[in-house]
Length: 131
Image 1 (spheres, rainbow, N blue to C red):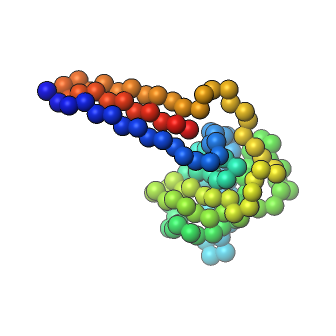
Image 2 (cartoon, one colour):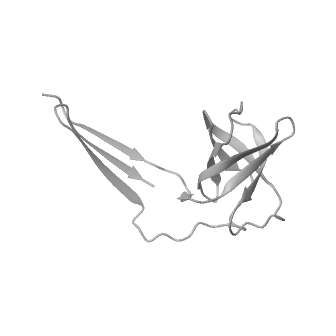
Image 3 (cartoon, rainbow, N blue to C red):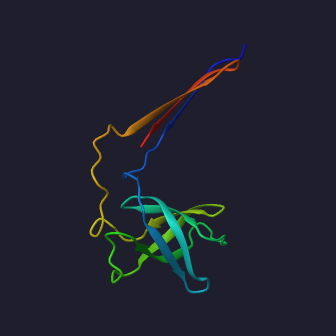
């Protein structure tokens, strides 16, 4: 009989991340324009999946334009820094505060999700994620 396991993951991000229906164009002096779909966003950063694979690296700086409902095309590009790269998924940190031009909608839920997983024959597990 297997033993049970408990996995607790606590997200300690300072700002709430939400899923959005935006896309982004990234500009780099040597790479040109790169586009991708935004997965989630907060006032401090954004996670996106690039339309094509690129050789991004942590600490790389680019300018991003966000496109979608509620975003004005005349808004200036926002400077960002790459903080995580995983294949075509890239996490970017805004170098300037985004709070003046965008804030996530208020959410009435309690800010966490609980997912229970049962593994028959090998025990059971519990995964708790705080957002």
